[in-house]
Image (cartoon, rainbow, N blue to C red; front, side):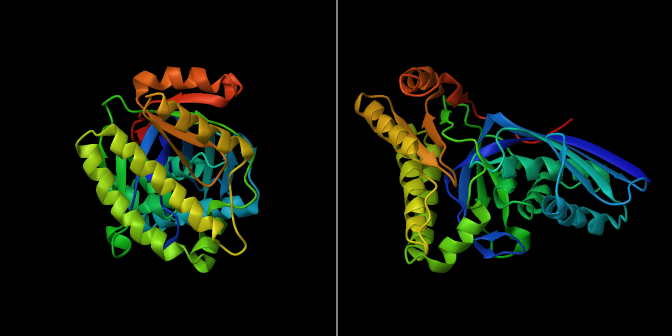
Length: 323
């Protein structure tokens, strides 16, 4: 028997952050989160199950991966093999059209694309809600990349009800300007940083409680298409997440000096009447939420300080595509 599937999934940028797990093995989050899927960053992955292989092989950007990375992929594919009673090794070839492990949501697009491709290759034929549950077990934020536009990941109370749902297609002049400060792989992975914050930061409990309130507020803002309110909530939420990391032991910061320069420029643009708001994940790169119609104005201001190649304009992106 042989089966193959190929899929594309886009990265998503969290506006209400996911930071911390209550169950490491099932990847169940401490709080619900909300993101915007973007068009410019994506992963394409092909999965082939075949008895011709002697083991699982994982190629990322054309390079055969080491044991640890391959084991993570194998463990994820086992979910599909077990559900389908499939006893076949796989070859996985994935290309990230974005920097890997730099705080630009490569694991979200990567595992969403892997889930979608494995779903086809195995013949499991999961629907999107079920696929979201599977993707979550590879990388938490991958659960949101199953869908386009604004997406909520409901934390749920168990394995079965922790999944993503689409909220809004974001077709109302919403965009992002991404400032790539550093493409290098970060020194502390999101996974390790999360664990350290949950276990040692005295600020963490308050972060979780306030994130739930932020989520309720931002959903109302999105429903009312209140861009300014949405942006302020997102900016505040991101800063609170980073504050919880600063309280970890030892303290953890993903910011670099240029990250702060971008934040200050965003505040100056707001003072000048351009509504834009920054958010950052576990990495130094800054994402600026803005009206798509004003994204070029913001880019023009940024290239007074930054190299034009560091600035990327993003539109709302689609959900998974089977190729």
